[in-house]
Image (cartoon, rainbow, N blue to C red; front, top):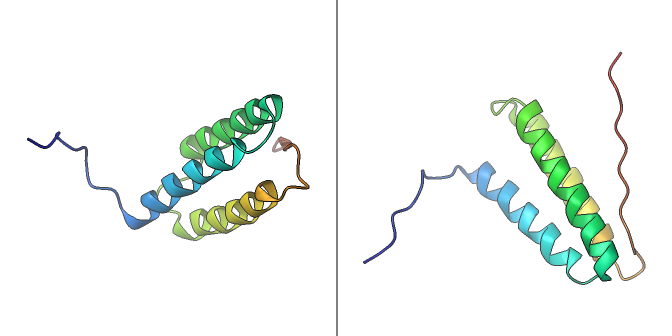
Length: 91
């Protein structure tokens, strides 16, 4: 018997989850301390965006997906050893 599933996800939700998983997989290729740092930054960034970005703002979500894919490519590079983040406070 199949396990009950949650609500069906939209295509965009699937893309976001796929990107998140890809970041976590890429982090596994780094040293343990860099892995923890990357996982922490990625997790907090995705959580922050999940609360601050309107779910119906598709253009902005698509922009964040494109930006995330570029950042993922940078993390996957063997030359990249860590990730940094900064927070701009709105006036």
